[in-house]
Length: 157
Image (cartoon, rainbow, N blue to C red; front, side):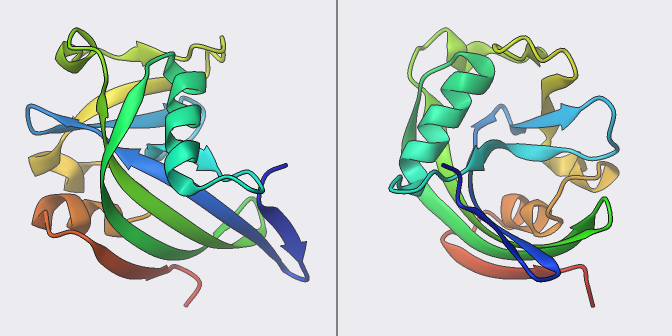
């Protein structure tokens, strides 16, 4: 069961995501029907730690095994989507593909579960300001390269 709870006007999410960087590019995902990008990851399941979530989600989404190599950030994220307010706690980890051949990937990756509307792309870190990467604080974290960090991203104010 995912750690998602409906509370009054809010949806509380506990999520975990990974930063995978190669050749100064970061791997992100995008729903082709939306206007934004996000880090790979997903909701933490009850009884599951955030590192395990990252490993599980990436294997499910792109069929690749990763190892978590460090802790990057905790982001308290407040936003609205589809007329619903979200209070999200996002744990961000640094990760690396286990297989050497996967570390050479630079092309768009398809979803391993057959979800054609999801695609995984490499964005140049130096050009992140040209993209709608959410939450916005991820851009600063990647460009500054200082870890670990705690950020509050409040789009509701």
